[in-house]
Image (cartoon, rainbow, N blue to C red):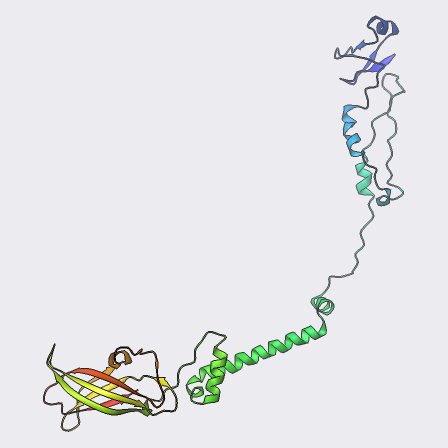
Length: 278
């Protein structure tokens, strides 16, 4: 009889007398392996992967009539042995080659207009366009007021509107100012010898405006007998305001404020002085 060695997979001629002599075992003439020719050794090792692939049944709904699993034709027997089958073809080829073609649900890609028409209701688009229009109007009005803020702050209504529009943007409209409404109510001059010979001028300022405004800059000019300027200096609010008054605060409407300026004495030529606010 012919038996195939499970180790080298070669056919070996075994007689009945040899089986009885070796108590049912045989020796492979090719590799010397000892095996029981009457025991079922299972499929060849090269097909052992097929068992793990076919542990679960394949859903036949994904296959067409031509792609069912089938075994290949038997190969020519070796050494006259007609009892063994040839190797089977892999089932994976028929699985992937026989899948049905996928038909596109739409002939072309969806456009932006179609997407908006499908996903965004008409009332929502109308609301969005309305809000966009209001935003553009807000920006336009704010630009007009801001670039003309010097005139806008002179009128209470436009000043209030500019303040309201600046609030959410974090900006601040400039304070209204009219230096021509600042008055010198009282003034007094004293001579000071230390540290150098100087003139200390004490002032009482009044804001005749109906609105609060920033403290102005003061130009102090010393005049001779013919009212020619013999000395002049500009004082910032921080230089003439008394201690305890912030120069960034506003000069309240119809209020008064004390101030003082210190000048180097130009000598006997200066007989008068003059103030200008700006």
